[in-house]
Image 1 (cartoon, rainbow, N blue to C red):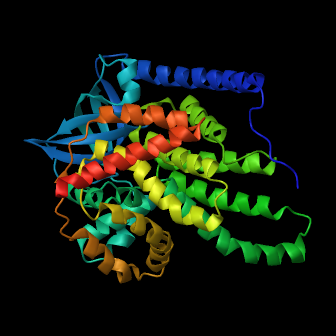
Image 2: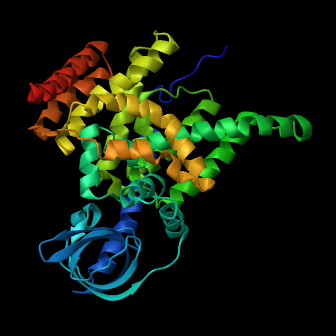
Image 3: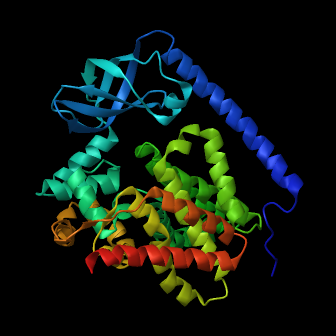
Amino acid sequence: MLQKISLFTTKRDFLFAFLILALLSFYALLIEYNNYKHLTRFDTQLVRATLLKHYKKETSTVLKLKSEDGAIFYTKTKKKNLVVGENFLLEVWAGKISFYHYLKGFYAYSKIIKTSSQATYKTACNTAITQQHKSPEITAIYQALFAAKPLSASIQKQFSSLGISHLIAISGFHLGVLSGVLFFLLKYPYQFLQNRYFPYRNQKRNIFIIISTILLSYLLFLDTPPSLLRAFTMLIIGFVLYDRGFHIISMQTLLLTTLLLLALFSRLFFSVGFWLSVAGVGYIFLFLIHFKHLHKVWQFLLLPFWIYLMMLPFSLALFGNFSLYHPLSILWSTLFTLFYPLSIFLHLIHAGDLLDTPLEYLLYLETHTKQILFSSLWLVPFGVLSLGAIYKKSFLMLTFVYASAIFFYALSYFL
């Protein structure tokens, strides 16, 4: 059996890769800077943008918009009856913003000149979902699950209290489930066709090309959310490395993916979803690397508990919501691998309401949520220990103890 090799075996390999990524980053930033100069050339500028999200604040409504150039910005309006996905032509006062705020996301005064609602595949998908459900809350959940439509604050709070926000927000987890389902559906029909018509082809490579094409179409359909973009890029890089005999379960793979995406899409540096996605994969890799001696069954059983504990500090820092049902997210995450593909199938045959009951149970469950006082500063030592765990198992155990202490701290609110 051939032995797998590491991606970077020498410092020269790493420096060469870093140089290429630096050049890509410089070129991408030049393009962004050119777009920034165009936007800020005059005091006002006409901008075409799509509505991503809106919420009411005092006497006006705050809009989150995405311009044609990919810039994310916020503005206010008194306009009512707003629909996510609407296209606006705005006069934007953005002449004094900095390049840093242009990349991060900025606020600007604006005036809506024209509104247009263009029929897209996403709006058709949302309409089809609406037709299959009576409850607007359940409809919103499925629209978030299949079309990445933002959820209301009340539903977000309920799901964060249950620890299942990551199941509703489209992420790499969903991409992994879809990849597995597609592989299962394609494997045997493809084997039959290959054995009969083109036995000379590489089966794994061809199936991967088909699956990645489908997933890329879905990624573009959703307007490339950061966590999903990370997962898809890592899927491509992982298969290319696997096909050439490199280690896949390696922190080098994650590092290469992260640096490549940051080089090409500098705005990802300011995306919380992107960094949470990177952290989640990092902790999975740490577990699989340090506990590779465990039997596969034990790895399968222990990994969900590990991921829950490792991501809990980030969840508390971002949301602060915790309930006694929160640890059950380990079970919900496992069951979700069955629920997600089944719900897609049921919606395709116009029977999507068959699974409304369990969702309604979770949606209206009285959680007796507590607001946990947890400063984001506590993530600093946790992050340092996590980085140390890349090199030594002793740091990994300290990270586990730290996360466990935070878990019992959250439980103490119910004593």
